[in-house]
Amino acid sequence: MWCCGGKNFCRVEWSVNFEYTCIREVSAIHDVKIEGLSFAYKNDNRLILKDISIDVQAGTFVALLGQSGCGKSTFLRLLAGLETATAGTILLDDRPVSGASLDKGMVFQDYGLFPWMTAGENIMLALKQRFPQQDRKKLKQLALDTLNAVGLDESVYRKLPKELSGGMKQRCAIAQAFGIDPPILLMDEPFGALDAVTRARLQDLVLKLWSQENPKKTVFFVTHDVDEALLLANRIIVFGQSPSNIIYECSIPADQRPTRENQFDNPELLELRNTLIFQINKDVVSRIS
Ligand SMILES: Nc1ncnc2c1ncn2[C@@H]1O[C@H](COP(=O)(O)OP(=O)(O)OP(=O)(O)O)[C@@H](O)[C@H]1O
Image 1 (cartoon, rainbow, N blue to C red):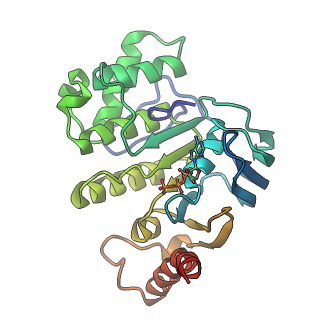
Image 2 (cartoon, helix red, strand yellow):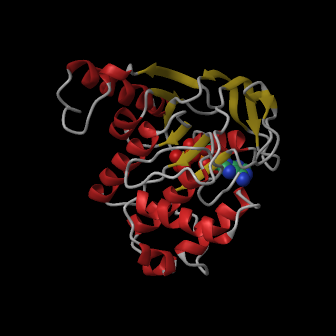
């Protein structure tokens, strides 16, 4: 796993701006099966997650909702192999998660780029880890292609993160993640720090990149934004808290997925939106009362 952006490669056509097949091979797809997952941090015996069980089919875009502090990031860290379950199992295609690996990529809210390296060097570092046998020229071309795919021009390759806007940095992180192409992509509030317009653009970008791939990545996307979840995901899971378990979940069939334009027109989706907001907040209300 690569914690800055995400990496691992397969043959994919990104019709965003380019197509490349030079060094990619078809990667495995991963069904995710979680059974009886419970977790407490070692320095704190309090159970954060309790008895979570879900099956997620490969290629599903899962949005994870829930109040602040309920354990969404912890859940992603367990999926990433950065933490070990206190009880229960996480299986990727029937193999238990055992530590970090290149088939799981992560994108964080704070971009995850090394500040002392240029955007290009950050991406190259990830590509080199993923393709140690490949020559530098091909990898550099791939890095430029990935930047291009996320709407950044070649000049960004030579820029340090501090010379880029928040939106550009997050585009670089997305370029890394999709460039390395992990079958599983773990995104932890990736657009939480961005303004509304940049956020909307990047939502569209991620949805476009994910939709165009075949096979598709399995994405776990943590957000506090119900509308973002409805726009991006085809499965939505709500976590309760103390300890956290799944308190609500739903799937959105392909033919009912909203677009940015009709997002607030469909009465069924509006009802689902209200239900999700209710589910997230009912825990708070019952706690306060
Ligand atoms: N390294 C750690 N050691 C001990 N407790 C931790 C650690 N990291 C997180 N926690 C605790 O675990 C709980 C869940 O935190 P987590 O960050 O997973 O929640 P979250 O749902 O992602 O929150 P947010 O939406 O605010 O990002 C919190 O009570 C937090 O204080």
